[in-house]
Image (tube, rainbow, N blue to C red; front, side, top):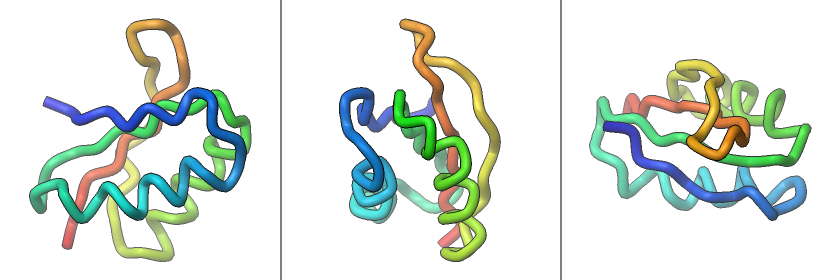
Length: 75
């Protein structure tokens, strides 16, 4: 199961700020998906993962078709 973080209506840099705040509540090894219409999130989420030592799993789509960026917590 993937937890979803709804950032659909949030402009840059809010999706990354919300990801940083929420990832600590996700158990190590579990995934968190950032759902965001912000076009910068496509680049920002993978870059944040590289800088923070987390795994960027990839991009897919939420049930409503919104872009979803999946992160696995490594530590």
